[in-house]
Length: 357
Image (cartoon, rainbow, N blue to C red; front, side):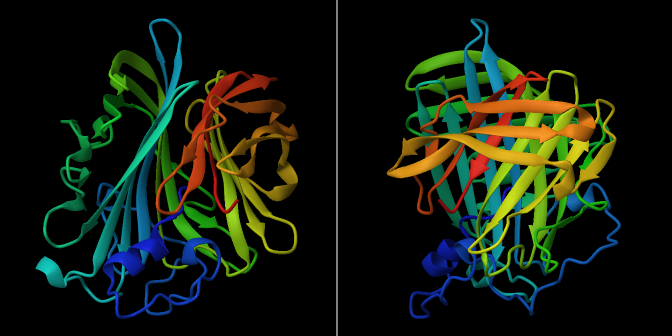
């Protein structure tokens, strides 16, 4: 559930310096009212491949990939790639520099000892960044997430690549499993007040390829996860941040869960259990026990990098541990994101994102 940490920043940087941004409401402004934009309501019928593409009329959306990788020596790595689309205007978008769409890219790599992150920005309408549904391709500059598939499923065979002065990666992602609609058939609620996104995932990707960190090259492989969300107001003004997990279990099952933290009151907690065949079951707060177990000092903050996760109805009782506790995304709007390992009733790995600390 990758929410756009760059929404307010993009508006202030590229939306016009003579119009200062409104006071922030909720984390990164994601609780701002968006009455001019298309609302997210239950009952949407998803259509593929069209819904892999951009959704004009909605304020914010993202294409988000994480991968848990190993090399031949068994060393663990993590890779993240995200493209955000932020609309500054609800009207249909014009071509050229009159376009009111802003794009933001995040890319990162993590090992047990190193974490590097980079970001890129682009204005829509001039070809520097964008997403096309057929054939599927998402890009910002020369960072790319695009299909190589010749089948009817454009996500069956994907290429993922990004680079910075300190790292690069080029991965092939393949899957024969179905997409998973999160929440209530793709309607993913974020608060008791009804804020929501449209949300689907491909948690069954298998990745392989090349990863380079600080001049050292590795041949790597492992599971990967795609999240796709779009919304117009995904948070309330009272929500200060979130803790989000995507977990690959050694049993072949998968788990997505998140808690939305509030300035006051209990967090909003929900998730999805995905069996090995791709069938999903929505989890409510009463189905999940989620608690931080230990913190690390990261960028002057106490970050909860060790967690207990229990889903009693699925006989899951695990502890997650960060591969690298210092996986701080030191970007314009900073947050923590990195790979985690599991121990307990199930083994496995996954990703954790924490914002608003």
